[in-house]
Length: 360
Ligand code: UD1
Image (tube, rainbow, N blue to C red):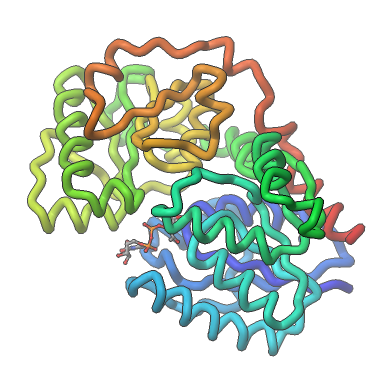
């Protein structure tokens, strides 16, 4: 029997871990202990995903949130170390690019426990992003790097991984694609969001904004909301608002001409992705999910880690301040042929990850 400790803490990690956990549970040689750092804690940001996606209850909830980056990462490091000393796992699994990812990897590595990083090798090349710092450091101290895309493999090779940095590097595809395929039919049955919000299918825009680079820069945040206000004159905008964004909009007093809603669970988001006209977002996950459901995506960022989407003409970057958001959104044509490509694997990334861990 081999023991895996899975570290999660933020919304996108629950979706990713759901896929891998399901595969782990199929295997009688493996035991999984789930540690929730508590980074995301509202019901709509956390518990709803465990319920909908049938993720086992966390064995530990560290309840660390709402403090500065340094304090959060430091406290997580200390508490995760305690858990790892108690559990003595063979391997620690971390996901993505949050403070929970870095803290989990660092705590494990200092105890000489093997670390596997799911969604390795992504780069925005902007060291101003907390996510970029977390990714680079996590990759550097991991023993197995599970890469979602060809580009992520190339990024790691360019940094010397697999050459002078000895590590196992595996191109497995994207676990979020597995999730989209697996939960897509349950979403139709279990979500009534289209009726609840009285939406006309294919006539509304789905929008999310939460990145620190947008929310903590007043000029950018005002430009984004002004762009959305203009677009709301042309049709409905469905905007499930992240608590970070809501807090700042209220603090600085930005007026919205449309009514944002509370964050939604996975089934509702999938249903909205299927039925929307297009997506406007600064989220990493939503850019890919738009592609899985064949929707064009406008990304409110200066760069993206998912460069293949831009390359295939299905994602358009918009600089919130320098570009005219509503002008671009209303006039842009996406390349629908770009949706025919299998950019994120075959939907079996979770299975491949677990098989590789067993071999390792
Ligand atoms: C974090 C990740 C980011 C990821 C995102 C997904 C880091 C550095 N950032 O950003 O990579 O894309 O999650 O959503 O780890 N809050 C609530 N309720 C919640 C969760 C958060 O009120 O359930 C508040 C917090 O108190 C905080 C703010 O929202 O004030 C931001 O939360 P935080 O966890 O710091 O980062 P995210 O912006 O969610």
